[in-house]
Length: 316
Image (cartoon, rainbow, N blue to C red; front, side, top):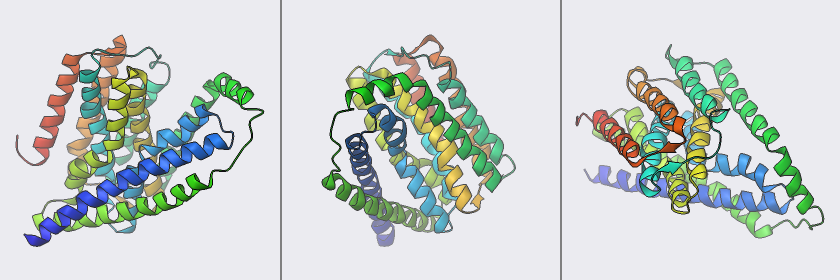
């Protein structure tokens, strides 16, 4: 029991370090990009959108190197489920109804659904090959390129506005970037190590802890960004954050570790977690057709997430 308490404390501390370090890393990288003359639009598409998913990505890469690759799939599926049910549910309660002006149906929603089903198709045979990893990564590259090309006019306006501004390299932000990246690595390393130890002590499969505790913890940046956006009356940021994060998780957080090493795909997660993810994806698709998420729809999302967590640990 003392060992269990120690490793739970290490898990909580290391996860906190991972999340906060990722926040500092993203903030510093954003400021460096803008100071170098990169438009805020491009910074948002690349650095900020990836930054909130940095904990999932780094912890998944560390898991592969620590021979705990089954954590990767559980982390991706669990984080995406938390994004849909918990985060959208929270946003809809804070800003009810959660109205969306942006035309999601053109590209973002289809790719959101498509990335989830591509994730499902690639792991149905309990195997995720390097070729499938490459396809996922290329899919995300195409998405980013499209997003950049669709925002060219805004990008040109930003360039014109900053044409005469002097580019100064912020040494303070570079130092923060380097230090925070070190803490991201350390936080991810000890997060995965503690998950492995806790799962052995409690005799619970690592992928189940990844599906619940790790996934919820690494989704905290998205939750914080979404709550802030909802409070400020900016629902497009709240919804866009979830869409972008899920697409990145499905394509890159699974693709990059899959390119580095062989991923173990637990069969019980395909029959459980993956089905919940696909169901949540379809629900989100239909709920947002009227460009809003009501408080009642948000409460239904909460109920689904409560059932999902309870089902993992046999409570329901």
